[in-house]
Length: 123
Image 1 (cartoon, helix red, strand yellow):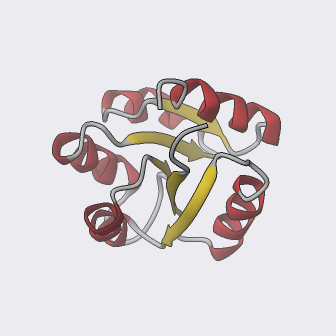
Image 2 (cartoon, one colour; image 1 turned 135 degrees about the horizontal axis):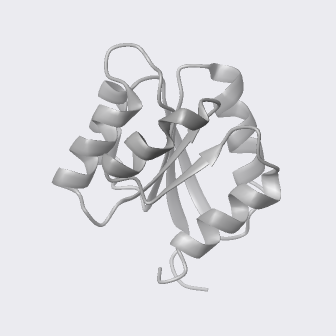
């Protein structure tokens, strides 16, 4: 199976982070999961832990997810970023910012895991 995945969940809503953590914890490929409440904190944690994957919300205080995605992709192009949002209209902007994928928060859990597996297939 290879190295276990390091994942960073970035969302300003603690409940959303807890839900994502609970879902990802069921995936055998996952090793460590870190959490951040905004884009600025996410940048610090990406530098410190070098996750394989970042799950990024869009609308957050201090630094939004689109700007954080741009900066992560510029500094650490090997880090995969999947933007999660309830606002489907952010999809184009998220992909333009460098996100590897966009998933609506309304999607089924299996759909999210399928997207993550496809993105990480080469890992």
